[in-house]
Length: 255
Length: 272
Image (tube, rainbow over all chains, first blue to last red; front, side, top):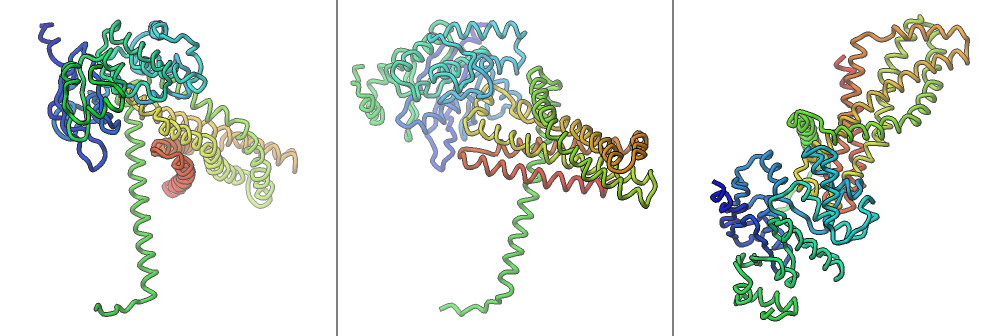
């Protein structure tokens, strides 16, 4: 039945502890990400939020607990299953690295061509449409080295879209951008969420943007990983680290 | 107070030497095993998909253009020089005290079967092997490879396999080209330097190779190409975070490729 399928979370974490590649262990996280959700992953320390983001996206397995991605237990999944998952769960790394040897359009086409997702003409058309949706129009046929940071960032965010992912994870999309470029990238991500209806999980410290986009918030620090179902609960939290986040962002809890 | 230990001065350097040799041997075996597994898995990536995709075909072709076709001018110059300095000299020296057949046998065995594959391999390692390591290492440093993995792209299938196959095909083609020039022009140069009667060797060259020799030539060159490609990619993908790793890995890739090519060449001689 369609209804029962839609109720099943796309990603489900049960007391899942990410691997932070140090001797330190991070607290477990339990949460469900449903289709259409817009999550924001926040914290004071990017080295803490990143392992959670990677774990939820199925980039790295949890060191304990369970992660179910698209109904599959990640830890028990095979390599081909994981590779297939990567087509369904997009992940945009911080800085959005592109293939330096390929031009912008070819960077967009690369994954779809590799996975043979359609005829060349269809793929070209799809890439053209994706570029047409960019809030900043420029020539995207240059090599990444000859593009502006804004062009590169938009392409990096758009690259997984060629695979029609069910969920898109974006790590620190505003890294290295000035205010003007941040606004353009924020507008593009909002368009993806509102017009394309993509399930989004974004990690950023930009509270203003988070507030405009996210339905739910995951707050992670060294002691606790908590899910807030709405902004009110987040603002009312007595946690010291959340207070520090507000202080860091120079905003009051009244928004 | 601990009793003073009697130190045998001779034994210290000896045990240290044994220790160093032991460690180096273990490291070498471990390296060879890792390289072997890496190569097999990379070749297996092709088998897993069961077909060469359009994008991989393009990658193999561009690798052949870069490694094979672009190397033709340098191969031509070196093979012509070798034809003059080695083949022609062999002919002039040997024909004085042996039969025509023996002269041809020496040329085919030493110049065509040994020099041509080895020198082609050395040129390929210097030109393409190092470039592959630097290219992949740079991509690792700039997270380009991780970015592709996150799109579900199998790095072995996408990067390693086309480079291994491209180098294997290029090595074979360049060795054939090298042998051809070095033998034919060797005869021509000997005729120009000595006597026009030396042109007779050109006809003898046509029957110089047995089918089994041709098969060994094919296998040897394909294996050399696969080794070069695997070593170059293996070291390129070993680069992790620091830019200082790039020249280190490139240097190791070049040296290890050369050592492996020469060792395998020796093994071919022993085996056959």
